[in-house]
Picture 1 (cartoon, chains in turn blue, red):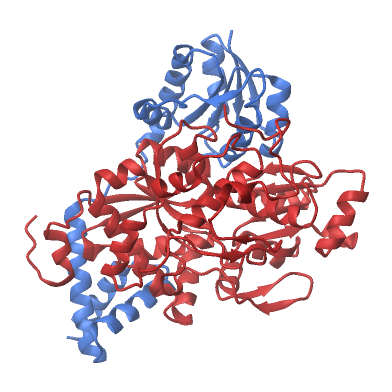
Picture 2 (tube, helix red, strand yellow):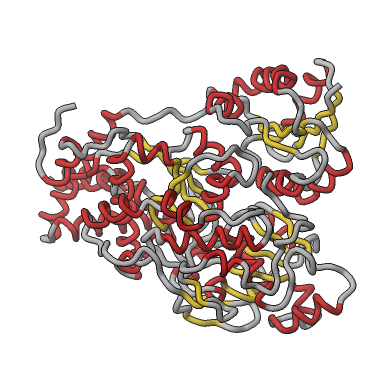
Length: 191
Length: 403
């Protein structure tokens, strides 16, 4: 039976996977302590598989675990440590990153990833959508329009107008397009 | 889409048109991501027909995985991380990587706890004495085993006579957790980027013992990294991306007013989500160490300097390999120059720089003197890697990698 160390250090509550995985017949050790202690915990628990939220900052600590284990009898490698971008993409989509003891067959991990995938499917829907190209073109035109208005209003050249707009945008923590829209609105208002 | 406007839009329509127009651009929430964020939000890429979608990442490991899998096209990356992936060190299969340009130099630092301060450890000499006389080992944190912070920390400790892998413990801690661990006494010091060092000083939770610019004035730090497949598949996109970020870098340094507004932008929740007073002062070179010293730093974080910062020098890339070798992360000497020539995209950079009027001619290498007095100019990497008194090249190294 595979022994799984489940690292539970983010809001995503990877820990909720525990029940599902236990039900599927795995031995699961739930770890919700400090990530700084991870290397020591891995040493003590000696898991076959380590699961961690893909988005956890603790993944950089796991990187240290991987490096330190290299010359040991049971080196730990990332599940995706192979030349197949598809496997990697699938692993990223599953929402958890898996580290396995070298030698464990990838097939034995598939049911684990399936369980994780099903659990986090709902999270996927929340992911941001790519912006449409049309929108980009529209933005560029609006920025040009605002720049022209500003040049007229401030009697300045193109570069000065850009600088003014960008400074304003950055100081207000906005994108250039937002300031452009404000300029357009304002000059329409002032007619 | 048939756009026929003249001017900069010619790039979009001519033979130089980007092959891929939507770029997913990764970054970590650190002050030195500024040029990437400014380029993406302030309309620097649109004239070249690119849309930059910023993607904040929660760890370097995740940023790396997404670069390799293609979920990110390019990213604000640790110099060493790009080389580690290329050389197959760490949790991912070796993948051909590329450095498109340097994003910044300087601006990281080594901070120690108040506990050490109370023991009088406020100078490098005092730290050296403490480490060699005290019975308990101190623990130092950095951010990624092959990252720049690990290399600065190791180099600095070694330059003070402290072996970073034997005389002290070295651990990885994610930057946002550094302060909590320092306060709880689980670590005694750390090397990290901003705003975390300024934040430690500001919150009176530690002091800055050394800035990384004292280790190597104008040292390379973050780069714009991507896979080589990306550059080969989308050469026009790669060039346009460098042009946009170069222009943003230049814009940030055009005036102190621009720097200030950059700091304001960075402090927003979607970027650094950190107080302005932890970002702005050090971005302007205004340093306070928490021990009562305050100075205007001549080698503060910089993004452009007329292009000096942005050239992907072969010698900069090679330096990280010499340190991997020194600390046992590489078991054998790589073909330093050959690998650097593969990774550093000098041609793409020079074309892009020329197109936006940034000086692009010059040498492929640069010469620098580091804190231990050694000169690094890229001419003898194998000899340089072996020239250090303190190292971990022997087989027994705890961090020995390479399978």
